[in-house]
Image (cartoon, rainbow, N blue to C red; front, side, top):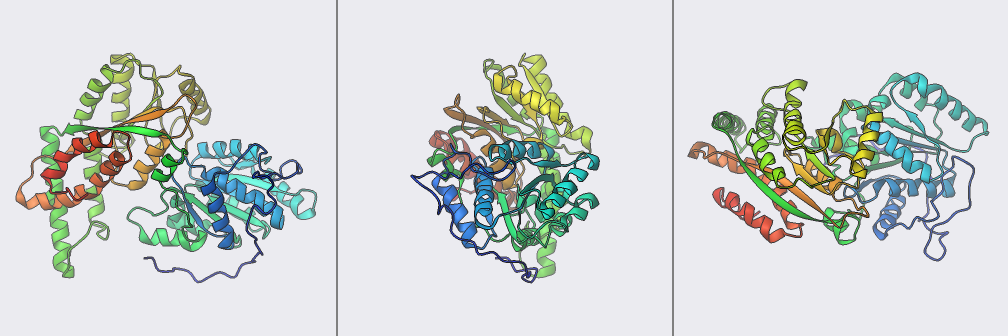
Length: 493
């Protein structure tokens, strides 16, 4: 349960009605408005859960967070809300805030289907600032009916964008895409308080190890609205495809096992110290001292050397595989960009040089233009695979992905939920997806450390079990995990 951080802000209120009042024969259609003004695509049929989510947002007076599974149509749901607001109250401005540049261009493609002509406000001020100020002026003078602007989190906090926000009219809707990112203090402080119509989108709005940031997010945008649309719901209703799940168990090397054991002991000592200080059992969530140790442990597991051998063995028998995504670790035991690319380069070499796959890397350094080229090459089959770090975790829409090989996942539930959703998006050529998930087996531990390890494993095993339970081969996948559960007495998960 979260506590309210800020008092309720006195903002202009609008008399919002339940949507879809003008529907006829089950479709939502409005006459062609002026260029750049919101209009539902005539061929678009919203799913029932999307319509329910929209109704919930209007019932909650234009505030709320849509917690919907990755790939279930959050963008379309949000743009349908903008269309309804335009019809009801003559909405004047739509602001979409995205965490990454590639999501700006992805949103722009969707906006164009809704008759919008968005300003893409990111990178160089000169490319967008004068365009935005001119359109806001035209709006206020009555020579323009609607303005759409799509920006990034980093542009939002800049002086250039902040200086424009004060001129936005009261009939403005702000949409926070992958909104969990906006709970970070600097970003949350930059969100416009004068804008009353607010919508947050995220499959995972709760911030990992950050209750305060989570509450800040809900204070600004509003609570999670019903219905929540889970991955199970999305698969059952055909919004996402079915999948096969294959855990690939990997042992640590001797050197890695020694380092792992040392880290586990340090984590245990830190928890014990907190328990003695506070007079109660310590937990991972409320112990700041633990975070660096948990990150070191996660990096060690993520970059485990034997994952490369497992990858070689797996892919040596799958030479004809296409449309495959390889998720790599974003770091090793060392810090810095060089180490974060080490596994990526090793994976690309094994696949491209040793096994002869046609693959390319996809990182934060890949330019937008290169990303578009890679996306087309991947979809056409010219490239068999993409080797990626975290930049493919959030929002990237490549429905042609049929297979994912996950070499690294953190304990953060957001990461694996996002990744699974990436792979399960429907595509005409895809009946079912396949996920190979590399799971590192902890070394044999002594009595001093086994209870600490049991608690650490508990959360991670939940991810593996959830992956397995929703898969078409659930029984087979669960049997693979059974030995690990037995070893640590976690059969109740």
